[in-house]
Image (cartoon, rainbow, N blue to C red; front, side):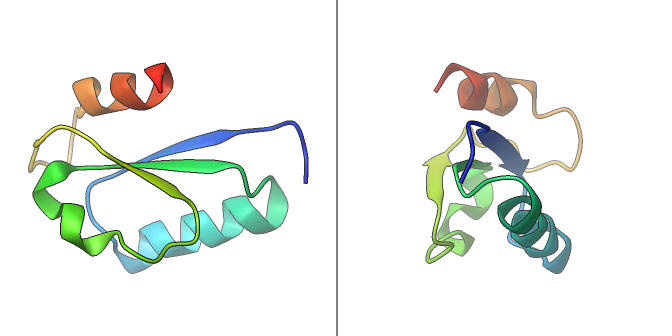
Length: 73
């Protein structure tokens, strides 16, 4: 599709997350890596993009380690 790659950091597979993922795929690229909070890892199957299990965080703010892991990967 393009030369853009996107890393999405997600706490849970919520409607807002799915809408964001669909928008990224539609408007930017299908080269997406979702880095999921290990607390909710089981929610992220069947997305149709690459998914990486991040660190166990369990909060809605400041997932710095998981974000860094996604950038590194």
